[in-house]
Every structure is written in structure tokens, then in C-alpha cells.
Amino acid sequence: MSNFQESAVAIKQSAHGQPVKYLLHDGELVDYADARLHVLSTSLKYGVGVFEGFRAYWSEDEQQLYAFRVADHMKRLIDSMRVVEIDGPQDVRELGDQLLGLIRANDLRGNLHMRAQVFVDSKDGKPEDTGPSTVFMAAIPMGNYFGGTGLNVQISSWARLSDRSMPPRIKSIANYQNGRLALLEAKRNGYDAALLLTESGHVAEGAGYNVFMVRQGKLCTPPVTDSILEGITRDSVLHLARTELGLDVDIRPIDRTELYSAEEVFVCGSAAEVNHVASVDRTTIGQGTAGDITRSLQELYRQAVVGRVAEDQGWATPVYPS
Image 1 (cartoon, rainbow, N blue to C red):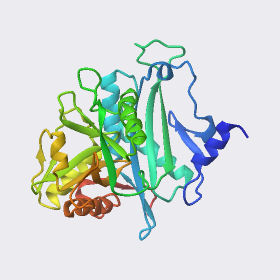
Image 2: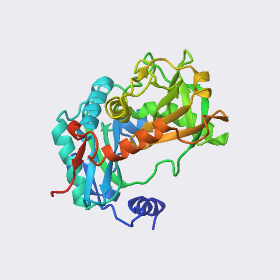
Image 3: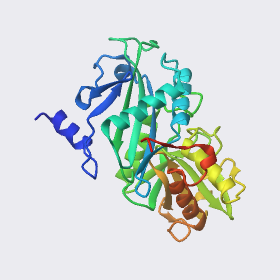
């Protein structure tokens, strides 16, 4: 068996031993090992591609799988294509239906991480090519992204990219080199995760997750104009904080040293979910454990992803017919 085949087998297995047989290529089911791009495609040569990462959650009580905010993720995927000028599909509903069909085709019944990716697939193409594009989708079993709770975080020496250089508010594949460098630096220095500052020194976001803090009893998060991804999980947390906890969230620039004196800090994202930060730059946050607001939002989010909270929002889509 080749190294590629061994890696594919390892990825295809979930913690429950569920195999992933199919991925989706331009709306058609393909065998896992056959979902490929040519090495000279524009995307691989120049990083021209956008994607969405999102989750589905299994409810043992209901024996049902719920995909979380599928339409919102597909809308952002289309927005991302528009911003970086990629020709691609524009139908939110059709894209969502394709993803749900992929899950059903694999008969997956556990917590999942899904990806929808759009690549410019011109053969031996040029950087300015906008098409033709190809769309791949995947649904892979996934548990806790960090492998635990309570993150020790480093403020990176790398600055978060700005809207004058790259569009930080969308999920462009090329953008993720920025967070990757920050995360590699943090790991080398013995941390779990990284946060990046803007060029002007304000807190932006982590390497793939938004950040919140509670300071002087007030829940705060950076504005979308401070070089952050316009996170869908961030939006979910804002809604839950306001409607379920009655909190008036302060959306404003945050200085690095405010994190050190905060009562609570947490990060959130589709993969990261809602995870508390135990320390920043070796400075313990609060008591080093999840605070009251963080714990409340963690529990509300766990309920929301399976449709038990914020039902009126229509966030949780059942995958299998009842």
C-alpha cells in the first residue's frame, strides 16, 4: 500500500470506525481516493481557492444528525468567490442539498467536520485566471479540534493580514498561511494556540478562530473591521449572548494588555467550537478555568447545534428523514 493510500485509510476512519467512502466533485459522488487536482492547476500553483469549514452534530436522544448553519456557510462561500474573483456556482440551496446528500451517501451518524472548496482548475494556468472552477465537498468524522479544553495562547509576532493586502473577512485558502505561521511559532514555544494582532496593535483573531473576552463584567469582541474573519460561529455566539443571556455585547477594538487583565477569554469557530483560554503569554486568565459567561455560552452553543436553542433561527438542519 502506498503512503497516499495509507494516509487516506487513516483519514477515512472516525473514532467510531465509520468509513468515509465518497467525496463530492462538482455535484457527483467520487471515491475518496479519486478526488484530485492536477499539480499544475492554478489553485495549486498560486493558491487560488476558497472554502468553508463547518460542522454537523449527532443527537443520540433523537437518533438524528444536525448540520449547523449550512445555508449561511454556502452564502459566505459564494461571497468569497466574488471577492477573490472566482467563477463558480451561485445557488446556496443547491450547494447545501449536495452536501447533505453526500453525508447521506456515506451514512455518517456521528459528529462531523465538513468542507466545501472551490478551486480554479485551469490547466497550467495563470495567476489571473478566474475559471474554470471545480467544487469539492467532504464530510469527515471529527471530535474536539483541540483535543481538550483550556488553551494556553501566545500573542504571535506575526501580524494579522489587513484588508489592504488580502481580504481577511473571507475564507480564502491563501489567507491561512498567515495563521499557520502564527500557530507554528506558538507550538515551537510550547503553547496550544496563537492570537494575532492587527498592524496597529489591536487584537484581531486566532489561527482559525475568533476571540472574545469578559472584562469588568462586559463581554467584548473585536469589530469586523479589525482584520477578522466574519465568523459564523462568532455570529452565533453574539446572538446567544444577547437573546439567551441578555448581555449587551461590546464590539470594539481590544488592546493586547486587556486580555491579561480580563476575567474570561475564549475563542470560537466551526472547528474550535467555544473553548476557554486558560492563559495568554503565560499570564493566567481569571482562575485559569472557564468563567460563568464562557460556560453558559458553551452549553448554549452545544444545545443550538442540535436545534434545542434558537430554534427560530433555523440553524440546525436535520440530515436524515424523520
